Length: 353
Ligand SMILES: NC(=O)c1ccc[n+]([C@@H]2O[C@H](COP(=O)([O-])OP(=O)(O)OC[C@H]3O[C@@H](n4cnc5c(N)ncnc54)[C@H](OP(=O)(O)O)[C@@H]3O)[C@@H](O)[C@H]2O)c1
Image (cartoon, rainbow, N blue to C red; front, side, top):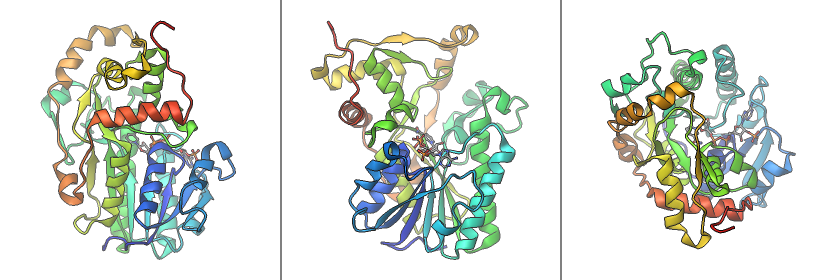
């Protein structure tokens, strides 16, 4: 399928979210027409910032209510669109029948639009790296697009914490199969890493989760997310750019997926310390570690750190097909912190306070 035309119309689901809102802003900056899909367009707290974007006053940006749990919610919105960035979360990743149902009705709206030619499906690196058995990381430590989690492992179940990763793989395949069957559009999957960067609206400080972890560092505490793994980073603005360049690319094909990450990694304790190095003006009090791990995980943390240290992160493919350049993490962290202070009015815990 051809890429979408410059200046074409793109629907973005999850447009009030951290990544979706950057996709909206960058699309507008690049001259596209955008239909921003949110759950409730009348929710001022979550949508005012969209209406303040340049493009809204002229009508190039429109904001639409659509709860993706409601079948047919995108029927009217997708009509006349050339592309869709399906960035949104779903209500749960634990119930895979529900995940399939939601994919099916979004696909139906794409098919019925008669105009959509490309859908970018937002997945996650969880669909690349998440393993029911951590030793699988040591066995297959090169993280690139062809790598899938060990899907044969009997412990790969929602009950064992694999629901998100499994749900993302289900969605990727559902869209690719439907596009193949249709022949009128293609589905390209983007697998973002851990997004850090500026929030655009105060409500986004509690989402993520990565910007929320940074908020907690500013407030004086930090937590290791789930069991230990290093943060594997991408700036949210670069992630948005990846989504858009995949819409525009003449080199991608239905069913392919691309990982959006810079390949930089950090340990959580280093991130907390880095804020003080990058922004000494804040005088941030060193945050204390709150460790919520079950004891069996704590006992194995050194082992986990050793295994993750073997991971070889690759972004050859997305750089080759999109030409995207990933900015250094320091820039993402600095801009994230400054946005938390300025946009969300977070009050950092200062030394001596
Ligand atoms: N953040 C990361 O580091 C990261 C990493 C890898 C992958 N991802 C993927 O990227 C996507 C966006 O993540 P994000 O961090 O931007 O998330 P986010 O800030 O939490 O935004 C997600 C959006 O999903 C929307 N949503 C959830 N359930 C919905 C429903 N039933 N109907 C309609 N909209 C619904 C919400 O809409 P409303 O605000 O309108 O309620 C929300 O704004 C997700 O698919 C996520 O899995 C994120």
